[in-house]
Length: 125
Image (cartoon, rainbow, N blue to C red):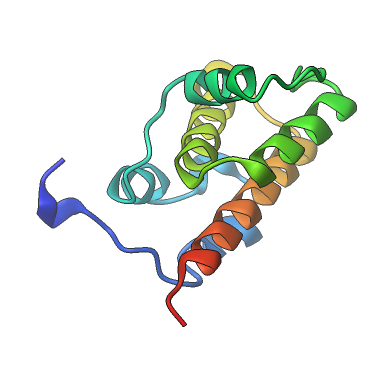
């Protein structure tokens, strides 16, 4: 990526995604994620992180318990892992899955909140 395409996080930059349920209308989402340095990696970095921390929980994202466990891991994961996971799941829902439910949108919004919290923690006082 060229330096001119790099973005700096600003509070509220994900606001549109918190109010729009149609994931395919999350305008400029890929550009923002790439600009912030995140990658669509098919959740590989998340899976590697979960192995490194020796998490022995169900991480199947297709169950309620699995999603709860994923959110728990993401709350403790480095920002890069959180952003990569968010980007990869958005891509999955919009391109590979046969649509999404309001539960899927809520799941992504919860991940956005975790990502925003990570950015807020990094903010200089």
